[in-house]
Length: 354
Image 1 (tube, rainbow, N blue to C red):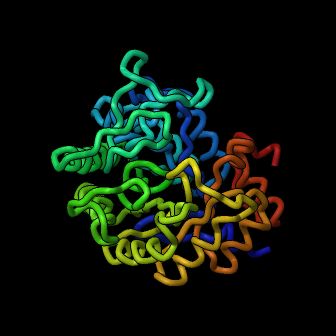
Image 2 (image 1 turned 135 degrees about the horizontal axis):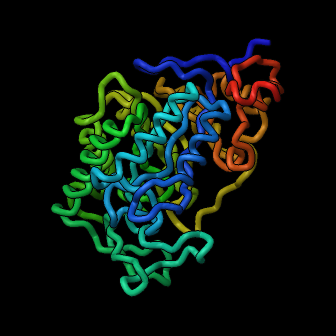
């Protein structure tokens, strides 16, 4: 049976063997930003499980950009070596290693989810978060420090340096994280950005930081390798970032050389109202693809092979990204192939179970 989900996709110099991607998912298992064997097994098992692209979790470009002290980082050269080993294994499974570069902004300095997901102060290993404006994420938290021009330039420089290290580590796809209420998204949304300088106010000013980050990343990223941007297509809150602005931004990103938009939503404010359900974000990926012509990735409660097949077959998106369903089943692509009647290679060590 022919399957669009298991058809190849060419982006620049890379051929993705199918349309299944593993979303970046925080593991909160690093020490001082360093990857370890947990990350090798987590990412490696999903590569052997048949996905075309494995995107490493939000990897911070600086220590203060981490969501928690247990986040991965790429702010120093010593962090490269273990990532090289992980990427070599991913490549050995005929999968593509990707990385999401991130800065948490005002959502930084939190404890791990299993330790309460609470704001940490300096006395218990935390630090002062930064943001576009001194507007708290939650009303019971101290406001973040508003970035000055020097601080903004440092973040841009940190993204540039982290990109250079990502190339050295052997990543073949880079994704800029501008979604889920983290720093870049905080600049985009009027709900978190009250600046009165050239980084705030108008649409043009609010997107300036993202475009400057993009330029910095592109200065180090090989032109022949794919570059993705993840966005929250809307805030699900009155007065926030909206889908119309997302379409405008994606048009500009396409013109500037971005290859694919990873289309999510929400995450900026605690009072968001999200009508969660199967495939609830797919229409946003479809609209952005239709109105701009850029490649898109669809995410969000996509759990069935038939559902994923329909998304690609009807042109709603070009890639389908899996997060929680992949945590439940690292071999999801192999299972989907069987359900859809497609014969795909298995790791030779597992072939006797095929």
